[in-house]
Image 1 (tube, one colour):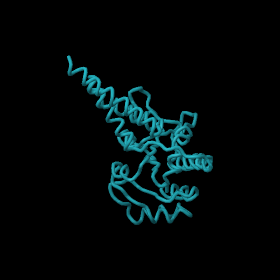
Image 2 (cartoon, rainbow, N blue to C red):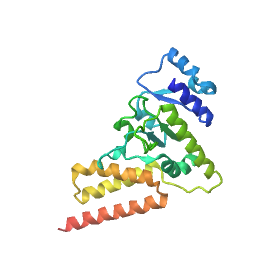
Image 3 (cartoon, rainbow, N blue to C red):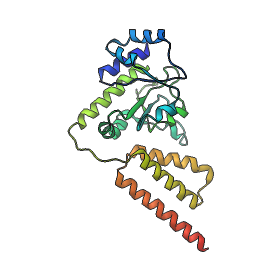
Image 4 (cartoon, helix red, strand yellow):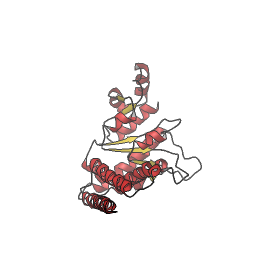
Length: 234
């Protein structure tokens, strides 16, 4: 039922590709059941693509936005440090507009949502805040809200100029340079993984331009070289 309703909502907003992450494909009966609730989105159900893991889904897209109703309560829980939906969409609308088909919005199970490991595969994690004690939405309802907000922001940008942003590869190179800087400066090793995740998330949330990324890369590279040079003189 939820799969059919999600397909119907996708059809409302002109989305073309529905992917299900599951260890194996759904059987024909379950697909037929989904079609009953899809209305004009039946063609999306008929063309469902199945992938066996989040890692394989990750390889297909330049940008992934995860959704969760459960936010982290501890500072150290960076994975569940979420953005408000409108804040996230306003940041990434330009990237989505300039690269149609390169973005995936990921919705979790209707019962348990997405795990921490699954959320780590995403560039942004968002929460639809209901301002009540009951923050969990049905997956098809959440999808409708996300698609509506996304559509609204994309329409706002339709006549605006586009700003070149850094790619995932360039941001990954910058993170690597900061990891090398941390090592050269004898940053605590047990915190290195947390540092890398923090930097990655800062880059993803800030959506830095090419110039900004290259400036940061230059700083990290020069600082690392100078530290190594001074260390060799001791």
